[in-house]
Length: 629
Image (cartoon, rainbow, N blue to C red):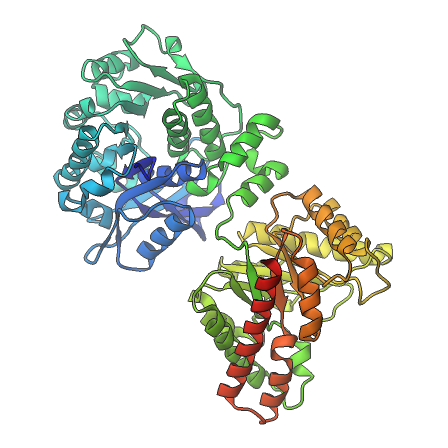
């Protein structure tokens, strides 16, 4: 029984992409961190398209290596083949986008971890779990890594698996160009040609640009080079031609490239060609392994390549299968795909990481409510919030489906301690009680403070809003939330919007739904909604319909508590749980309120406070789980 569709083997790295566009790498001042390396990108790209993917590579036993493993896992890639090397560092790459022709990059790969792969690291049983094995050219450049690749290929062919090669020629990684020539894609070398040709017969599919077939075929005339490769292998040859698309050759090579089999192309703006080939390869492998005809496989490949060249980064640019289907159905509306708001929303929503289909949140992000308690000081409040975190961890015990809401002003210590807890982490940005909405001053006037937030924190904003608010108030609040929403996307942070109409006026079954609609009409698409515990099924139905009609890909809703007694919350949970879009709760004072008052006045100690809050939180979790069941 094959449990994997493909295994890639070869490079992995941390890519540090210059955030400034249009200048020299020397002048870039900040970088975005992504995973990289062709086999790693391809494993992620195919996983996004629904294939069961794995990668064989090496990473260091350090922070960057752990980042790669964790990011692969988030992308759904099997990591059993990732070797953690205690003696070598993870490879790094610095990259920049200067213009549509120049993409400076520097490889930091001196004795890096993935070049430590050897024959001993190839597990035959692991290889045989897959339907196919995909190699890339760089690991044929060194005797140790070449031996590992060839062993994997022998096992694959003996097992009847499909095999593919992405030539992926980087001259400086073969030692035929200098460190400063990372951008170079072609340098003639008889030695490289001979090395590549010695293994071409081991593949069923060989993919490369015209320049890559030049090095594989030993000629700078593309047709001559392809014929030289054909003399050594019966593999299907896929030649990438840049803006002219790509062509497939399954038999003899004709006199012109135009005579090859082609698929439809997609005329879009070229922004960043780095990683485009790996995106192309991901789409091609999807078609190949689904046994599609070459026209269809090349359609997938060309589309995935188009996404890559129009976005920043490699793996982050690649589409999900849902996104690809949406793109094919709707077509191109904006040639700079990263500026197509509708498409970008599908891209964002269909590639979010983590399973939060159930979410039980202990909310202690309160500020005014703590400050008004007898005996409260900023130091005491901060310390008490670390006790809240201990209670949350005691209930969660590392299991998924649990989270906290904690602020960064009074609860900074608890928030920092929670960083590696595995909990869902929400963090508020609103100035407590403000109406019209204003935000915490630490964010800055342009929300630039979000750049300091770790990517695993969810931006939570409470907005008191009512359909009957005057036009000036609505204009102010919508403008604030719009700026915040775009800042969260810019910083790759999920966004939770909490709305409470009942504090401002009378409410009926449609009130919250009308508020929700106003935000969608303003172009705000929260990942999460936090809503009041409605008293009627009709109110829940209206709110859910307002969300699903505007954004069928939302994460969902959590129910807030409003300091309600436990028995009232039980009744509201029972009603809310009837709606699948409601994923859980975010409750605070019901759990910590009385305990906080007692602790601040010295009536209970730390252990008693933790114990009581643990019991209260556990009880609420049980109530929700029973209601959902």
